[in-house]
Image (cartoon, rainbow, N blue to C red):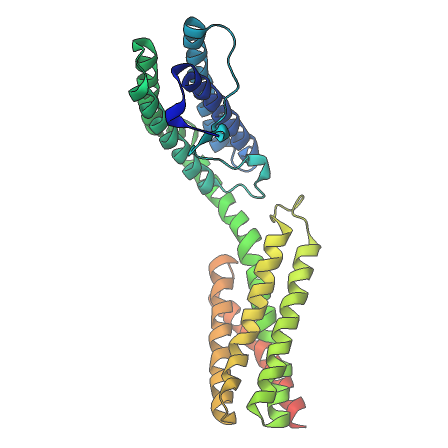
Length: 318
């Protein structure tokens, strides 16, 4: 790798050409990745890619005029300190807001590059073009807003926001909620059965810890192996498995940790209070993201939790 300060005008122009080509391909990849779920935004990135191609054409014409036909292959990964960008094809999931922020960052970085390159050039035509391109990059934010206004009508934006919310629920909320429900409810029976059977806080904690970790591992693997996301759009299976397993473990640990308190009844009362908070949180998530009526969500979760809780106490007291 070489420092940017060591590059000559010929190398800077070659790097600029390569940079514009890569940015154009990135925008095209974004457009293709968004086309199925966000067609209006895909059109915006297609047009932004076309603008990058126009910049590349102008740079090539100037290079041919100054240095001839051969353009050396100088890429940004060959220059020390140049910002590296993760290839789109390596991204497991493409989130609309992430793509938009990344596009803004790309324009800002390219603008900075052109300004630095222009300040180092002694050739008037090269300096003028690089300065013009820096200004064009700074105006891209306005251009992007104009393109969005043309393509993202109120109905199109509302539809895309609805789709983004659905994908967020499928990829993050649903596996997290499934894990939290399983961890909070399914571990109640073994935990309180052990508590009332032994009357010892430590024994109850050990059983609760084992049940929480075991359920977390089981739910994590079950979620990760149930669906690879290719047909349902539920996203990366590994990420879903981690979310589901972590929330399952967290749900079980919430009412197991109070049994670290040596006093049995103090620990039990605190554990019951934690269970109430967990069930309330589950009800809120079901109402907030699953469009479940609040009363129905609270009743369903509370009824199920009460049944499991009662089973644990009855078995432990028998």
